[in-house]
Length: 205
Image 1 (cartoon, rainbow, N blue to C red):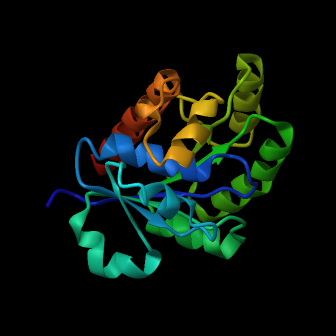
Image 2: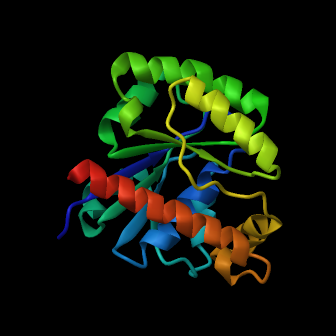
């Protein structure tokens, strides 16, 4: 088996699309190698999404990871919401890449301030990337990038637009590229996936 890559997603404010990122990123990566989502969120939304049988990746519970994890090259963990600092440090330590989805709204960005300070104090900023999600304004996206960079956080170049197709994909339990209006947002997730692969390849080299 090739090198196993551990990707964790964490957010500290609801509405950032953490589970959507986990499932659709997994859909992209699964075209390259065996991929699973570890559904660690209390809502179990990834498990519901997978129940339709139309996803490319597996979805497993945290309790199954020791038994089933060896099957997969990419393991994406959708962590529970509201991690405290100690949980965040544990996740960061375990990960090859920690992705923090965030909307471009100022309340979401403010929540990143303490996160950035905590991660920097422990030396985890280098393996952390912020992914801007639910973007509807390029002006706000640009402003958000400036704020996050000023905090010392690294922001992924691709972002994910706000798209009703993501909600439709969840309710229909399919990938968003199977939704008629989902082609553009699927392109966003493909760009995110390529950036993730580039980062993982760089960290291994």
